[in-house]
Each structure stands twice: as structure tokens, then as C-alpha cells.
Amino acid sequence: MFAVTILGNNSALPMHDRNPTSQLLTMDDQAFLIDCGEGTQVQMNRFKIRRSRINNIFISHLHGDHYFGLFGLLNSLSLISRTEDLHLYAPPALENILLEVFRVADTKLSYRLHFHPLEQEGQIWEGPKATVTAFRVFHRIDCWGFLFREKEKQRKVDIEKSREYGVPASFYTKLKEGSHYTRQDGTVVQNDWVTKAAPHARSYAYCADTLFEPSICQVVQGVDLLYHESTYLDDQVEKAKARFHSTASQAAAIAKQAGVKKLLLGHFSSKYTELLPFLEEACAVFPDTEVSVEGTTYLV
Amino acid sequence: MFAVTILGNNSALPMHDRNPTSQLLTMDDQAFLIDCGEGTQVQMNRFKIRRSRINNIFISHLHGDHYFGLFGLLNSLSLISRTEDLHLYAPPALENILLEVFRVADTKLSYRLHFHPLEQEGQIWEGPKATVTAFRVFHRIDCWGFLFREKEKQRKVDIEKSREYGVPASFYTKLKEGSHYTRQDGTVVQNDWVTKAAPHARSYAYCADTLFEPSICQVVQGVDLLYHESTYLDDQVEKAKARFHSTASQAAAIAKQAGVKKLLLGHFSSKYTELLPFLEEACAVFPDTEVSVEGTTYLV
Image 1: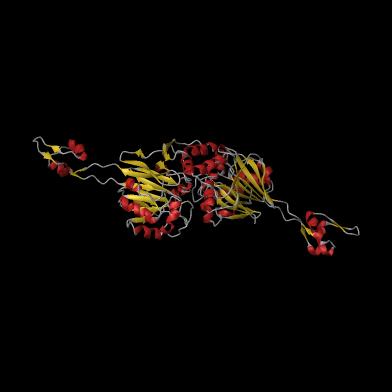
Image 2: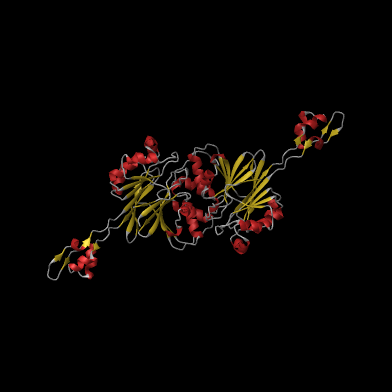
């Protein structure tokens, strides 16, 4: 499964039963946590997500609504005696804060925490079937977006057809890579006669918090699902700009220009009780939009 | 009103819909926050407590379940544009952690935060009608208890009786202080003929987290309400000792020996789903016991 579960979709002030930012991404048999606002572990309890599944945590930036839940989560993982290594990718300054918080509490974690400082754009994680890339977004302080992408998949061998054309099973690995097969009589079996196209390699991009910045489109070009912050509605476009945030229709403009398949909105200002206007404003620009709902899982 | 509202009564792991430690104490027309575990501001929303009422925050110690909600609360107070000064009483090491958290976020608080390091026992706050005293309790790291006490009140003048005995209104201030009145003819009006005893000066003591330690009784002697941690039931008495915590009947033994009026239990281990056994074990030693319930206000 490649999917994202929203744990928090509000901006800084927790209100209207909405929580600060956190998401759980499932990809390549792994659970990744993206941002960790206050109360993330309580949201995990609520939505029956096992904390212990998470091996990698990505923190976009050091505004509190994106990481104040990390202290409690890391503590709790130790209290439940986690032993697996845990990898944390975050702006460099977080490391000393964490070390000091553990030091004053005389805390020795039950597991090894690897801190990976985010300092330059590029690939930060690689698994057998997928990668994670960090890229810069544009906020008041250093802030990172994350691109989760499946690796290009191999073509599927049609075994029945392969037998029919006399391709031996020992050549299947080459078939998956796209090779043609040359028979002993010199005739060639074209690859696409005996294979099916590789399944689409899916991708998810996370952009929060950020100013409306069209250069982001190059990075998120054609992703299957784009999560883009939309802190404000369009009548607050000046406030959005001043605070390095985006509006719903700006998020939709990014989605449209980048040619993504679907847009997911989040990071709503606490001033908004109702979220329907976000959907309306975004859909006018880019119809394949959803307003994120806490506890809901969106397939990529 | 002199009362305490429980915002969180669980120990470190948030479970069973119970939250880490926090309490709101109302005394002398002031709202005091005692400890501030993760999610405290969400609990305040839930129980309709206005964050802006709080002018003084007391942090007992630097284990995360007693202060990880502070970062978010201090941030939120700034987001809602608080201007009144805020006073924070906490172990010294918290100051640099807070400064660093604000620095990396480029946060300038909208209000002035006064940090008062807890370094020695004694009075730490005084208002017109009450005081707050810090005292040491016994935990794995430096940990403080807090004693909230109304000042001794003045005797009440019985105006009718005073007139009857010929005491002029100009002497009422002296009457309240307990003075006798000497009439012009040299005869003395005894104070207790024309006044009523001062109302009882109430007191509340907060002890979490702590080992069972009878020397605490001297400090909390005779308080109206004692909140004492009871992380475990009695069958875990060895574990309680090893982790510098108390059991329900140990908390009750402190209450009994200190001659308090009422005992309130809290800081329950996440291993316990049901809390009734805490009540049973404590009541066997000290009958005037209650198990704290989140969202409930207890009069002092």
C-alpha cells in the first residue's frame, strides 16, 4: 500500500477539534512520519496506529506546530522499550534541543536515534522499492518539502506468451528489464510480445509550510498526490504572503501547473471553523482536490 | 473560589483517554497552572478554560510528562497576542531549552515571560490573600512540590454587637486584627464579644512525582486538600520504589500522618485501565480519598 493518513491538518493553534500537522505515510512496507505536532501520539492512539511501526521521521521545519509532539513520541517509544533504530531527518538545530531535553530528564533511550540533519536538497532515504527526496520550500525559516517516490518498476512477464514464443524461464529476469530474446535460429522475440508494461511508479509530495512559489512545480511535476498547505482563503492573500503561507487557490494553481493527479489541502488557519470554502476555491482552479480530514487515509 | 481542576492525571504514556499531568488551580482571583504535560492546551479547550487567565505556571520537574505541553502553550499565548506578563517557575535548566526553541523558530513572544528558577525551598509567590511555597519532593531528578495557602484571615466584626458595646466604626480595623477596645470610662470590650472568628485559611498541596517519604508530612501538615501521586497499586511497591514513585496506600499513609482533610490521587501508570482499585487501597488507610478525574474541579 502507498497511502497517507492525516493525523493533524490545522495550523498553529489547535482548534475546532483539529490538530497541528502530522501525517503517516505508508510506502514500500514502511511507515514514515511526516512532521509531529503536539498531540501526534494521542492522534495515533485515536486512529489505532502502532507507534512502533515507524522507523523514519521527517520534520519539515522548526515551527512548533510541526514538531512539539516529537519529544513525547520519542519518550514514549522508549517507555514501550523499542529496540529498533529510529531515523530522524530534521533541520540541524533540533539535535541539540533533543539532547538537552533528554539530558535534563536523565533519559537514556531504549533505542538508537540517528539524527540526519537536513542541509541540502537531494535523496535522503532509499529502500528496495522507493526513495525519499528533500527539497526546499519557502517559509519564514528554513523549511523542507519531501517527495516520496516508488522506483521505476520492471515489466511483467506473460508466462503463457513466453512459453508460446519459446523464451526460457532463465531469460525472464532480462525480459523484466526490457530485453528482446534471440532464438537459436536467429529470430528475435520482441519484448513487448511477451511482457506487459511496468506498473506506474507512484509518488507523493508534501509541501508545508510554504509561500506560493511556482518553482515548486518543477519538483512535484506529475506526482500522483500533492499535499500543499492552504492556510488561508483567497481574501487573505496578502496576509498569506506576509506570513509565508499559501491560499487554497494558490495551492490549486501549483497542482494545475505541475500537472499532478490529485491535490490534498491542509494546514488550515484556526480562524476557519468550516473548511468547505477551501474546497470551493481550490476546485475552481483544479477540480481534483480534496480537503484533508484527520483520521482519513488517502491512497497515492 | 479556591479549587483545582484536573487537566491530566496519567503518568508518562498517554493512554485510556487519560493525559499527562496538568492542573489548573484557582485561588485569590488568580489562575495558576501546575505542570503542563503534552496536550494541556487541548484539554483547556475541551474543558472551556481560557488560556489567557493564567499568569503563573509552576513546573515540578523536567520529565516530559510534566512539561512537554509548555512549548505549545507559550506559543499559543503569543499567537492570541497576549500582552500581560507571564511568570514561569521551573527547574533552572528549562530556561535555555525554551530560549533555544524560540530562537530556532525565530519566535518573538507577544508578552514578557519571566523565568523564576526553582533553586531553594520557600515562598515563591505572594498575592494580597495567598502565597505559594515550593518544597522538595523525592524523585529521580530534582523535583518540587507546591503549597498554595491562603493568608490568615481577619476576624469578622459583628456591627450590631459593636454598636451595642459602643465601639466606634473607626476602631473596626483594630477589631479585625483582634484588639480589645477600651472605652473612655476605662472599661474594656473584649474582642470576642464583638467579632466572629476569622474564616479558616485554606491550603492545597501538590506532590508529584515522589517516592513515599514521610518527611513530606511536615510540609503538608493539615492541608485541606493534598494531591499526592499514586503511580502504582500496592502489589508494585518495589517497582514504585525503584522508579521513585508511590503506591495508593503510601499516598494515603502520608495523608493520614499529615492529618490532611482530603486526599486526591493521580499520576496513574498507563498499565492500569481501571482506577477503582486505587480508591479501594487508599481508602483502607485514609477514607477521605478521591481518585482524580480529568475535567473535574475539586474545591479546596
